[in-house]
Image 1: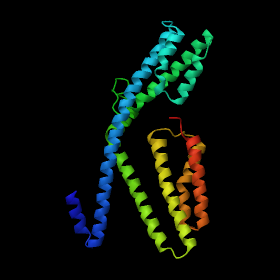
Image 2: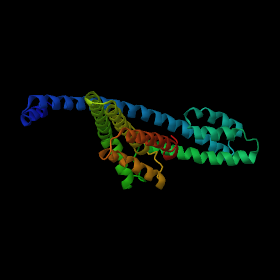
Image 3: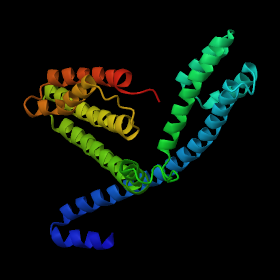
Image 4: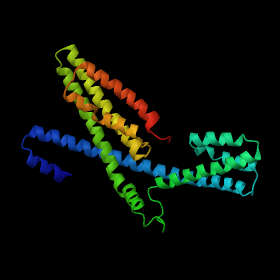
Length: 272
């Protein structure tokens, strides 16, 4: 890094500019280092959770299988599966709660068979989320699986923290811009306009970060035409500020952002 700073000093003759660039670079490197350390620790903990969940889900699926094959009775299976519900998502918990209230043997059997399919889906999902799953003869020739595995294990540990550092830096710049612009405002109306503009831009970056993180990195985005339509409209909303920065425009855009984040949470994301 010292060589890089020496290079910047040689390219930028002005000491004030050099100092500012140096502070920015050091800040970015520090943010990236901290975010990458947190990311790697988070991934490690997630993998431990995935492994534990896979073990428990598999045991639950085996209990269902034993019941379907008439190797155990309904109430023994329910008792053992109940111990696994602590890791079930709400959807599976609700399904299981309805299932264990069944008192008709035909409905119990049908419910167990349906519940087993849901468990198998969850097991497949957990396997897909592992960073370094075992490569088998079935998956080693799949180009998509190979690329996805390479991205998770080799690219993501560097790219995702870098993306987060970039977003944090942009948010910091927006805060500084807001403070300096507010100080230089000549009228109350101008101050309100600057506040709304800065707040809208700040909100935009945070919402965009949430969309990318929850919707695409975690693969929860529901790919429907209306969801994509609203997303594209949201992405291009800031262009309005190039033509009009009046306070009422900032207020309307803030209301649109509020509407969209509510819509995105309820309609555009799959349940975790």
